[in-house]
Image 1 (cartoon, helix red, strand yellow):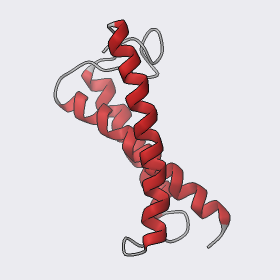
Image 2: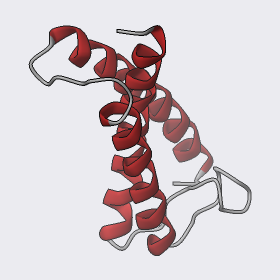
Image 3: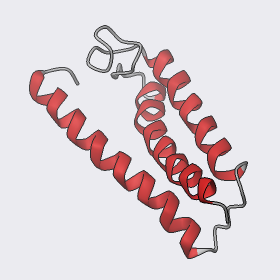
Length: 106
């Protein structure tokens, strides 16, 4: 496998994990921070914007994981690479949202 396939799968996992809170909050009718809020990433966007942003992130994840190289769910290596990207994004998001929660943003 080419090196860029590993990079694509890593970032695909990150985009997938980022899609989850946006889509989940959006379909639940809750406002949630997006890059389009004012101020970006701190203010709250509408549920519709969050559904669209979550769907966009999921589409990018799909393209990076399933359209770059070959991804096999049964391959431990493939799962670990995408999972590492998802784990890193999850930790970063948890820290960012915890900080916003303390400031009263989320």
